[in-house]
Amino acid sequence: MFIGHYGVGLGLKKAAPVSLGLLFLACQFLDLLWPTFLLLNIEHVSINNNASTPVPLTFTDYPYSHSLVMAIVWSVLFGGVYWLIKRNKKYAFILGLCVLSHWVLDLIVHLPDLPLYPSASSPKVGLQLWTKPIASTILESFIFIVGLILYLRSTKAKNKTGSIVFWILIVLLILAHVANLLSPPPTSVTALAWGAQFMWIFVILAFWADNNRTTRLS
Image (cartoon, rainbow, N blue to C red; front, side, top):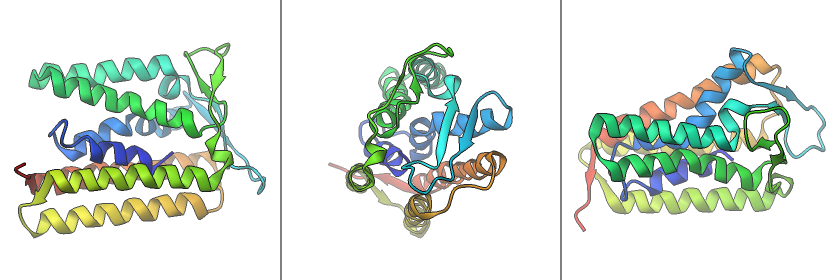
């Protein structure tokens, strides 16, 4: 799952009116860790060039970024750091849940490759919605659109920057999502890992756009 994660971040803006950049960082935290772990040779993936496969990647092992136990650990750490800095238990809890939501959404679409705990002997799970591309696209699009609507209902632009940068962000997310669906498999794992670092631009743009937006009065 890709764009659906960002839909969760957008949708939680009203419940936790922190920066959208922070919400995006939380909802994609596991996927932001993953390419770095690939480059450090801590986790591994192989490229599947079989055109009939529903996913061009075989997630060989990613116990530290994508096991359930570590997802819970990262959630607690993320929320805990926010609480230590801001002392807001409610927002810290929501941000922690946002991190954990990534694993839950991945569970729906992934093949059985998500470990429950960081060990080679761990059972691996996944409900395999990726094998039904139309259904998975509809689900992701629905989550994203609902999140976008909720965000627009809870915020408004303070200036032109708050509108222009926000819509640039949304267009880039959609283009990246379409590219993920239509592009051929990456040429190498290293190219994949460096390309995935591009996701940080969404976090940066979200901080920038949200800093130029304000909460709508209900």
